[in-house]
Image (cartoon, rainbow, N blue to C red; front, side):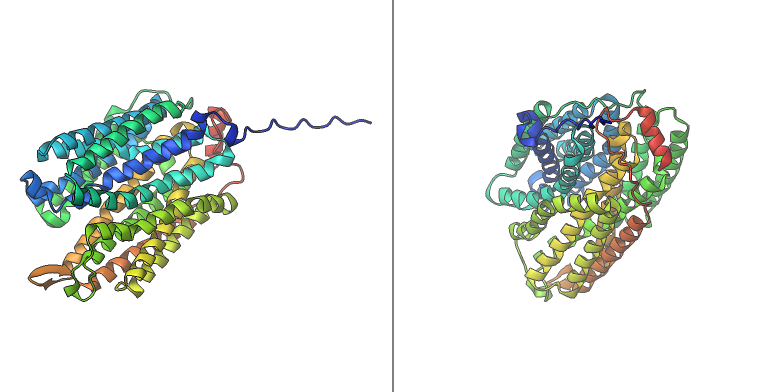
Length: 497
């Protein structure tokens, strides 16, 4: 008896035969992520000279960094939720436009008030990576999605590694406003390219935007991060810092209560309390802490004067070049991280990345005097960060419904931001406590740097433990392309995890 032969599935269109716009989707989104990281980094070489250039105090000038941190932390989950509701490409383009507008204001002004406000506008670009990752999930076939998400995650480190030497060169050889004109042009091109090359996702989460939830989250985060950022300057036991932390505790507790009762909450806390999502957020916070100490300490260590006995006295440009191999490694290892996740699951990739970060800090502790060992240790930490950061969004994408991917990834990026802020405060406290005078100036002792490495390495081990505690990957892949499942099917999948 004849049997009917099975009908083979239609062949997929090779990437090389796709229309130009489709082929440029990943490069355009990745360039936006790199530009966002460059924008966050370029102001750092300017900080020592800005008091002279603007006539403001050093404490006031530090708000050029703090304003971006605060606005980015607040806007990332808010814009992520807006992207899920109103269109991810639309919100992504708006974030790039806000970043560009901030760059134009910085290029035109030397008034510190306007500069701080413009830097706050630029903080909107922090939402670029989670929005882009959500777009990649919606638009790419499964065989291209993993490597694209890994590359998108790596753009944070790549852009940071490129931004510091680029900004140092501009500051050294040109007027400092030139740097912001450059980011203005790149931002405008990025917004236009996004509008042209990126399709608007059809995956939406309809409903009314939770304004009360957004205001509550913004207020609580500002109080928390302002306290963490300024604690070392105002004094950890000062009335202002204690009041900020108390206000953050009260406001965020009320916000949690309100979110559980809202019909369409800004953040679906039922997802956050699931082990697959909650433990991934914990791992993101710990990984952000461990990663950020590497950049902070390396820059200070190699610029320390030779009179300390360990310092190399390098210039800002040379310091940026020391961090560049780490950025290159992030670019090279992002495809490997995607392959590991495909073969073993993103949980293993995340735990492996955290373990590599801890190993990098072991190298830093073993030798922090020779330049090649410093670069080697920093590059190992950057490599581990690539593995970890590429796995985090994949874990989120596998654990939440397609209509909430941007907001969920926005919360994950927020946790990394909180970890970085805590790392900055902790490293500063350790280095200040272990300082000694050199030529009449207080300079951190080598012991302080080694303690910072040990602290960051211990946090990386904690991140590894948190990653291994995440429930194992299910056989069924819920990272389905748009239209691959109905909302009811996605919710059933979520209930089964």
